[in-house]
Image 1 (cartoon, rainbow, N blue to C red):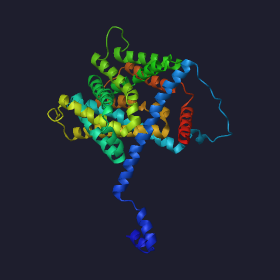
Image 2: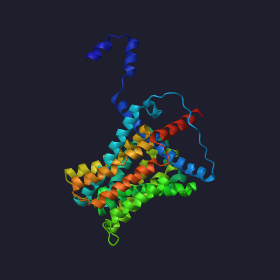
Image 3: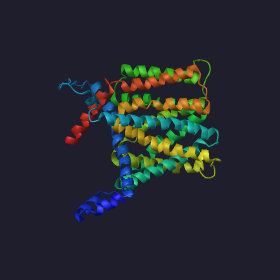
Image 4: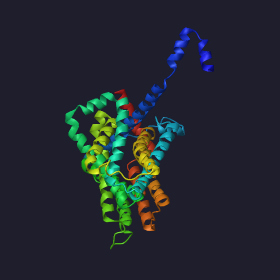
Length: 402
């Protein structure tokens, strides 16, 4: 009431200006959706460029065309300015988004384990339902934020085969393999095995860039193989500590996670990350319907079960992805890659506390080695995260000037 009475005392021109500044609830929601989609769209380019730079850097190093530019000192620089365009508060927000997104992902593994074991949901049914729900949310955001890109992607037949390949390798295989890995092992172990995808990406970069692994990368390979060996065998050379299907599905999941970094790059560059995810998630869910029978094979869920399913689709898939990619855009891919190690940590802890899974010392040591591998691999080839992000920022500024 007070706001209305104050505005009524303004001159007509002032009233029109004040009314023009008022935002309707629908417009405010549209702005939130636009910001959300823009975060995912802009931040994915950091990941794409990192893979491209790694490949090009390997080629340049193999051909001997590597130049080193000495750093030029411009005087004393305040400590907070070392973040380049990433201001201190922006980096902090990005780190928090990454930690929350990784936590949601980690908990999703444990939630999936409960749905699989307690409510007897099948991995195919969970993958199908989760993909359909997440795909619908991605498509809604794409329709609101990027209608032209969405229409263009749907009306470009030459991209259909690429979308199908990306759907099968980057979504269907990822979701199904992860859930089967959780089914045969547990959320913590399945999430840790997924980190081996870094080695597969490294293999692609080395072959594509015609170079041998660096010293840090060789150390990472040794750590990963040792960690997986301890998880699978418990330190024994004569018996398996983990079911063989769990290991095979875990490695399949790692392979599909590596494909997710490589296969969709051209589609994402052409149509955007939101459009790509909406189409591939929805297409994958539709392809799984004849095998999953989402209606006929629906498990008996009580209120808790429905809440857990909603969490898995909304928080553990859709929201977790947005938070992680928003963290990449704000804090840089190097920092977020290191902070994302919270995902297997949360998955392991929640598996112990919630499901009651018991990890023997060799399991914990193997998990620790794989997490160390992630840190070693992500810091290899860069002096530190700030240097990497500042260099990336300089490249972005050059592109804008050009």
